Amino acid sequence: MTTTSHANAPQTGGEDFTTSEGLRALLQRLHEEGRGAWQHDPVAAALMEHTARKYVPLARRHGLDPWEAATAAFEEMRRKGAREADDPWAYVTKGVQVTCIFEERAQGLMCSVHQARRPHISVFHDPERFSDRETPLSDYHPAFQIPDPQAAEEDEPGEVAVERAGKAGKAVEDAIDLVSSLDWPADVARAAVEHVCTALMRAGTRQAAYENLRRDRHSLALLDLPQSSWTALLRALLGNPNPAYAATSAGRGVLLRLLLEEPPEMLLRDDDLVLTISLAAPIHGRRRTRGETS
Image (cartoon, rainbow, N blue to C red):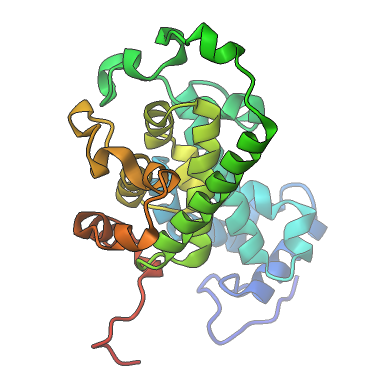
């Protein structure tokens, strides 16, 4: 079969699969040649070697072997969507990223990748020892808490519930504004704060939410944040879980301080808090400093 050569085509003498159009042409040809095309075609072999090198950083980020990412890329390239996508490489990369995320989740949960893809299973955190947690289990787990039966029987008036909901909503928006004003991209700040608030509502306590989120790799993947940024943001929003800091501003956290109607301006005067959030900002979200030029 005769193929058109390009100036920067691979040395094997086929389609220039490093470009989107070249990859599309190669995938279309392999599809039309049918069974055995991938196994015997030298350009296909060169493509897989290139793919293995291309996805090494993505594989290592999720603790996988590079050839596991290459295998995922191979599966994506055989799909009809890859041949018909506007950008085949973008299509393949997205598929590999999703596969790597669930491969990592499956290893952490000690289950199959098929099971890890199911929402009702992926919500669980990785198995861990009680001693791995910074806060004792009895301090935050609902099973060890004794609720006040009298308080549970008292129905909260509707006006009070509405007022509390309004305060909570304002506290969330103020927290988002605070984080985004300290070198965090606005979209990342909103997604991260809202994710923390959702986990807080599910957990019921700040300590439980902190411990659930601190090792939640799924959240890191969804938000595309490094572990150091995520941990620092959790401490800033939910407070330091160490009991020694319980009565301090660092122990209360931004969300509780805002709920207690502490003005955002006062939080910005907290040098330790401002420094913590600013230094934790993801690199791609840092704003240009005044001394830099474009």
